Image (cartoon, rainbow, N blue to C red; front, top):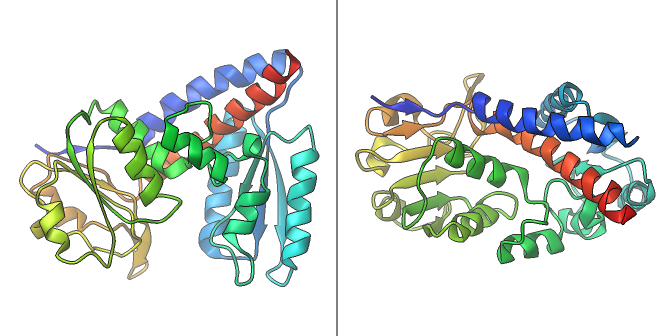
Length: 286
């Protein structure tokens, strides 16, 4: 019997804990507040923003949205980030991806105050992740994967894990987080030669490429745990990187799309806003 690893109970657990801290912060006159910066009208950005706002509101976090047209100059966007860094009422800054042409992810990552960088983009937070320093703010999607594995008691020590995808926002940081938990990690990507050589050896396969239906039953051995981080649409229906129905016959556990990792990600963002507010508010007062 395959175990369907749903994101909802994981997200609910994270949200409950975050809510308790929000109440504690409000008792010392700190209202945790997130600034969301979106450039342009990209549909996936808007839907992610809507989901994030809904989660923040449920937990008691206020949201201030800053929306620019795609024609806005990069300088104006960067100076807005400077202002948000300086604003003591703002505890977290989230810049929506994908960014339009001419706006560099790197420039934005270098500009955000690391203490407000709730999606773990800045070099210093990525450095803390490499060092396994838990005071840092980590990228939300990799952290969501780790929370799901922990919630469902999937043992990582010594496990062979194949991560497909090497982006700086998911694949690379996720591979490091898994190494930090003593897993043995093969970090592959869409250009890997003979991908099956790696995936067929793995106890856990995690795909984060955004290539629909990339992972087929032939990619995995019997009893593999399959985590699908991809999200796209085929024939108007949401789908992930994994051929869900077909792979289900061989996997011991699998995440659905939608309803899996994405569900947890916004709860992680809320948790990190609360963490940032706590450190900015409480620790800076001492």
